Image (cartoon, rainbow, N blue to C red):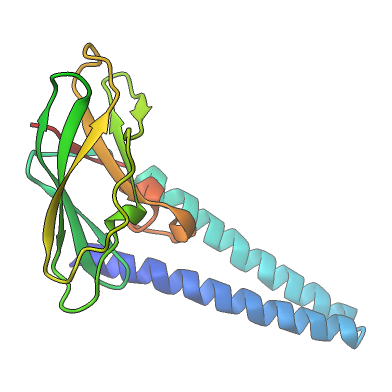
Length: 192
């Protein structure tokens, strides 16, 4: 439950900062139009303060998140205001390229989920990140549906233990808290 609260708080903080900066920009345009330099300076100071506090919150989260490798079969969850997309490792084989079967599970009631929006990487024992040889399919995952998809990685056989790191991409880097991809990447899935 605390994780869900932190996710919601991060999204709300993002929205509040965006709205506050839009209001500050409109007020700044008004101050410039009326040639009120005192108001303009105050607005710039307030906007800089909002950006400064937001930047601290945004960058402290990944530094405070501890690195952990989840046990085989454990899931990582991806959330907006609620958590409905879950990913786990269903198995792996290595008669050549490493092939990992990822299980995508949705516990949504109505809306589809989109596993193709996730960034999947295999991390070897030396810390090198390897992208999949083929992308995750863009097909939506229906509400309540579970799908397993094989993902192949071109990892040399002597690379040592490999773990899977999954995160969102895109604008989620601007959201503080557990939803931030830099925080998400601190959790890895162990391969059986």
